[in-house]
Image (tube, rainbow, N blue to C red):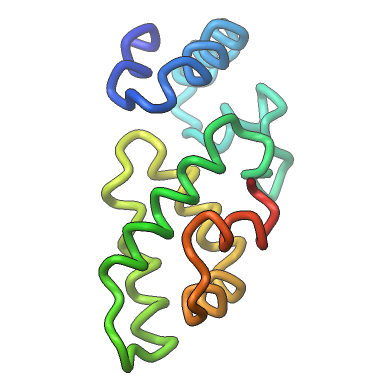
Length: 133
């Protein structure tokens, strides 16, 4: 199962397989405990207790640019900050197996992302400004 999970998300297949191969034993142990993805993340030292360090994950820059690009393309003039916040809350539902990481990332940077999406900056600039690219 873990060997094939990375095939579901083609742009990050390589980094994903590297993480799975490096931490296969710990990931299997954590999946057997039913403690959830956060516990596995802590176990492989990809995040610390209390928060995921999104910037440490391979592919976060790509995921950020994907999400910001998707949101920018859907935004219309006159959108309020609350409208943008609602859109940010839904964008992660479309990113596949990275949904948990995406939600942690959006929650961590919510205020900054709302401000950045309110500007004319493109997706790459937004992700560079928040320090994930």
